[in-house]
Image (cartoon, rainbow, N blue to C red):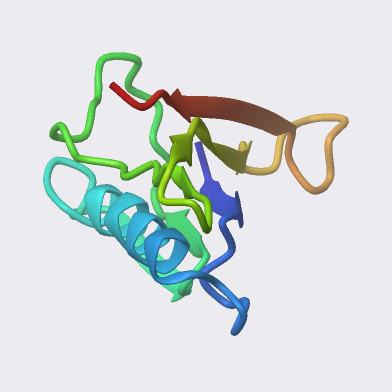
Length: 114
């Protein structure tokens, strides 16, 4: 992987909720921590570049928490909350792919009230 971009929640969006901003910060912090820290450089709050590119297939971040808030209603009840995470990893330049190969992923997290 040559770079990672967090598309949603985008920490550069000034209208993020406090939960979204904290989740984005947590994800980007995990990418900047060992074992990836030795090659990771924040290009901005939403993008991490790796030079040299990460080629290992068994390289993982430490565990980290993502918070999915429940939806609160005026009557005091709660319903399920959802959080969509979207990201794009890009390989470094390769033959036939001038800008690298892009791989986008979406993960939907759901939290149900107890």
